Length: 231
Image 1: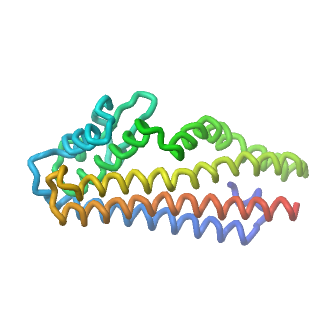
Image 2: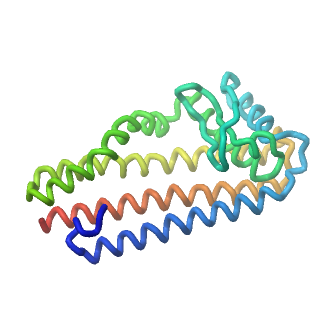
Image 3: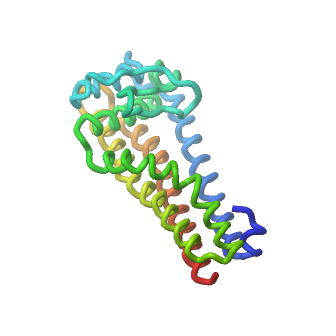
């Protein structure tokens, strides 16, 4: 939000500083951790995609497709198409990091196949959040400029939807990582203890980005509530 519209509010400046530190810090940490374990071979003849395929079959999600996606750490599972999108490094690579990320995304596919409730809730919130994220700021600004408390309150309600989305995302991401580590550490994966250790570090670093996003959204909601009470 533009600083001048916040009336030079020092608490808003602090919010921006804290949010920036959390965002940059967690991103730097995951990139550093991913880069480190990308250099460590998992001691398997299988690629990330192949390990993920085995995990999908073991988890009852054998009908999920796997395809390439451009970029680095852009990996995701798309429930609309039932496809695992893996970056080339993770799809074709056999490093500890490649297998950890591929199995994490396979964990999401298994969640979808098994009807994991938090994932259903998050999926249901997506269209709401897409609308709210584009509308709440304009309504909040209009409420400040025209001194319309009702608009500010509506904006806060819309923003609260994104906070709920971030909070629901946490158990979804944590559970996907739990499933990935459980599979990697099982005898079925054919991977050793080093791969399990590295996977835990990579996936813990990734989880911190979601924790940071949730914390930032909560702090912003608290700020908006305090601002609306003053105005």
